[in-house]
Length: 85
Image (cartoon, rainbow, N blue to C red):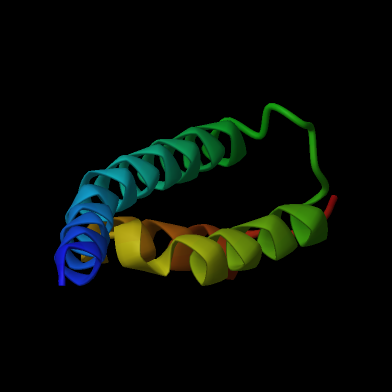
């Protein structure tokens, strides 16, 4: 009985300790998405228009949960107005 109680306690501890780890991971993911968005908005990699659109689409797929409506609208505007020279 003591082993079962100890095992159950350890299991509960592990479950509850995962929550802060998930929050930290989400924070790091959001920061990475923000950094990518800034890099793309400044076109720091000197991408062609079609490459920029591809990167923005990848950003939308990977970071959807961190993008607000205003940011999504800005991305859509850049994609719509983008033309290769």
